[in-house]
Image: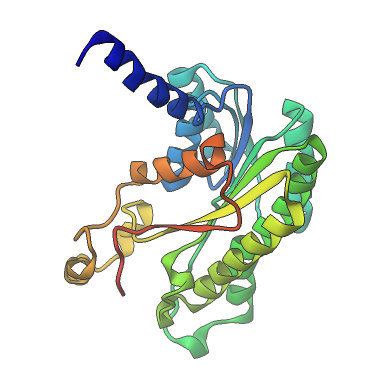
Amino acid sequence: MSRSDARLDAAPRSAAWSAFDLGGRVAVVTGASRGLGREMTLAFAEAGADVLVVSRRQDACEAVAAEVAERTGRRAVARACHVGRWAEVDALADAAVETFGHVDVLVNNAGMSPLYDDLESISESLWDKVLDVNLKGPFRLSARLGAHMARRGSGSIVNVSSVAAIHPRPGELPYAAAKAGVEAITIACAHALGPAVRVNAIQPGPFFTDVAAHWDMEAFARQVEGFALRRGGQPKEIVGAALYLASDASSYTTGSVLRVDGGYRP
């Protein structure tokens, strides 16, 4: 290859990579203190974004914010919030705008799926708790920060769903119902907030986050034989999809659900 050919080959690649640049933008990530949320938060900062690190525990948020600042030099602010509580979500939205002046990216990642013995043992409080955190919070935060983004003329919202939304199992019924709802509000919000704001969802399969500590690993080893990739995901493997949907690289993508599941089959 000649030098001129090499330059021609490099030019479009450089332009393509610049579409993933988040320089000058502010990202709010819920459930950011561990697992997939932590990896996305770090990736956004490495791509140039300032970040608001959100989870229920202030000390956990502060630890990730300190890690972001040390590793990337970006501004990182810690904010404790129970996203299942409407008033706390409103306060979070207000604080995000007041602290940074604007918000460009929202990732609704916080979630929970408590264990229970059988369907009859699911209490009203468990049902409400799961729906509040996994569905009510993402809706309200999308409504508040989505309206802010729309007024500014641009923005991206990324909801984190689950393969449970389309492959529900008896042991995670409230969670599956909530995640199916997340995919519904993803599509509806894309229309409600468009054309200025794009709204998409990631549908992860099984990832080796802290929840994996509760898995039956022998049963999981048998299950992954049916996956195309024959394995579970590592948390860092969520980053490519998150950067794509948060950035201009996905400028013509909205109302979509992107599966990141290793070719999952139940």
